[in-house]
Amino acid sequence: MVIDPNARRTDGESVRIAKDVLCAGAQTKICLPDGPEEVERALARRGARRPVLVGDDRALLRMVELLHRRRELADATLSVVPVGGSATVALAHSLGVPTDAVAAARTVLDGTARPRDLLVDESGGVVLGGLRIPSGLAPYGAHGGMPGDGCGAAAGPDGRDGTAGTDGADGHGSGPYGGGARGRDCRCDPCVDDRRRAEDGEGGRDGTGPPGPGREGPERGSHDREGHGREGDGHRPWWTPAARTARTALTLLSLPVIGLAGGARRREHPPPQRLRIEADGVLLTDLDRPVERVSVSTAAPGGGLAEVVVHPHAAGGPLRTRARAVTVSGPDFRYHADALIHGPVRSRTWTVLAEAWTLMLPHRP
Image 1 (cartoon, rainbow, N blue to C red):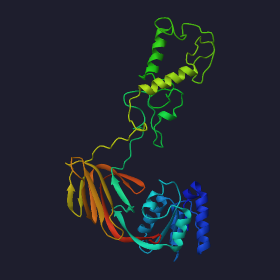
Image 2: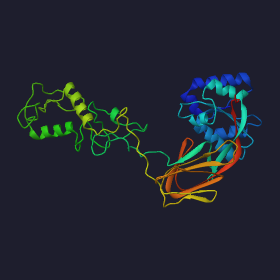
Image 3: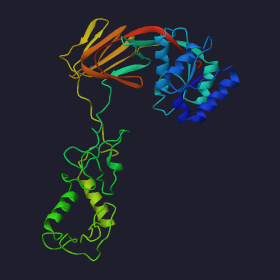
Image 4: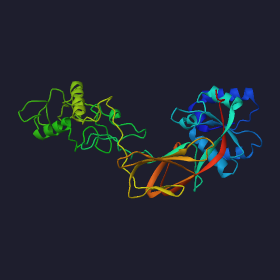
């Protein structure tokens, strides 16, 4: 039993449950590797024992690729106990493996070995479920700031919009679009009002309004968290908690409306790509016909064919076919295979290997 280090870090309880069930039901040798090299050594020394992986989809892909490279995949019946978040074990779930630790461990002991097809490319990469083009990735920060204003915060590494997590209460966090609380080039109403007050000098053209740099307010030397109103500068900060709330509301109202339901921002569709796609040597589409997306997957377990679906950019339904080999070529493109993003590449050929590997799955009802 190979326990992936990431599984031990993310969900030690599920790892313990799987270990207890497997050790109680069979003679088990436990391996706790710290890296791919130790996994390879453990597989090389397994003898007649069946390899059991406790980990997520990435660990499963690494193990299958390793066994394929060693030309031992056809002789190894793999068992998987998925451990991780729902997104990190989606591939195992789509293959039919239970995501519950107890059910998955019992499948290892009492399940049925079922052969499955495999997609391999000319570089040695493997695809267990399917792949799609384009990869579905958006450039970093592409969905952060609103177009046309300086108030947007770049999207964070987790892909969420940066507006809700800004540093200041007014929604003007530091980032690539501004210099902190108020960007100099920001065109939202509160920032424009601030610059107008600073230019007027007296808090407004009519002489009314909050004290400015030329008028001394009743409270001197007051401090706020943004560093304005330092001792002795004769500047009383005009924004109170109520003014902050009003300015935040004005900022939100000044942003364009993106969606109606739920207020969630929809991800933009990637632009069409010019790709040449061939299935068993038959041309499906060429570079002069842009495509919206392409998907390739194993059609049926043990069928020996890949199902190819091409969605053209022009009007009309998708093109569907089945083939043993699929070649995609064109300008640099990325593709999403199982749980990983690959590329950019200019050409890639995937070939189906019928019943190339075997996976332990629950008994069919």
